[in-house]
Length: 197
Image (tube, rainbow, N blue to C red; front, side):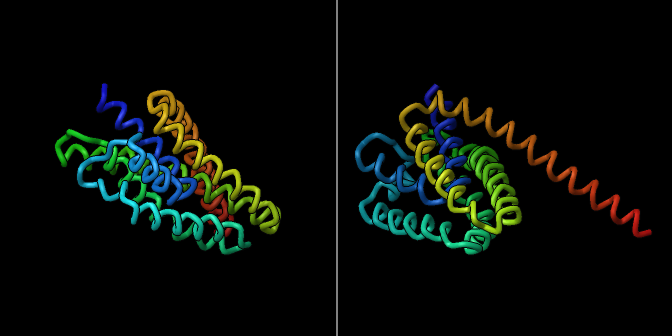
C-alpha cells in the first residue's frame, strides 16, 4: 500500500509539473524540511535549505515569465521537455524501497507521461488563447495554471490517494483530448494536401 501511495504521490506531483515546473519542487522542499514528506535517499537534497532557496528563486522567475506577453509562448517551448524531466524526477524521488530499475521505469513512464500530457494540454490552451485574444487572456491562464500547480502539489502530499485517483482520471480525459486534437489536425493536413493535388 505504501508503494502505491508513493506512486500516486509522484504522479500527482508530476502532473503539477505540467502546469509549472518549479512549484512542485518548492512545495516538496518545504514539506521535506518540515518532516511532512519522505524522499528517496538519493533525492534528500531536495529537502535542504539551499535547494529550498534555489527552488524559490526559480519559481519566482518562472511564474513572472508567464505574465510577459509572448514570452510565455517561448517558455512553453522550453517547458515541454523540461516538464517531462521534472515529472520523472518528482516521481523517482517519492518512490522509496524499490529496485532502481523499477523505480526509474515507473518514474519515466508514469511521472514523465503525466507531466507531458498536462504540459501538452497547457501548450495547446495557451496557443489557442494567444491566437484568439492576441495574448490578452494569457495572464488569466497563467494565474489559473499557477493556482492549479500549487493546490495540486499541496493536495498530493496531504492526500496522496484521493489526489492520485483524481489526477489519473484527469490524465485519461486530457490524453483523449490531445488524441482528438492531433487526429483532427493530421486529417486536416491530409485533406489540404489532397486538395492541392
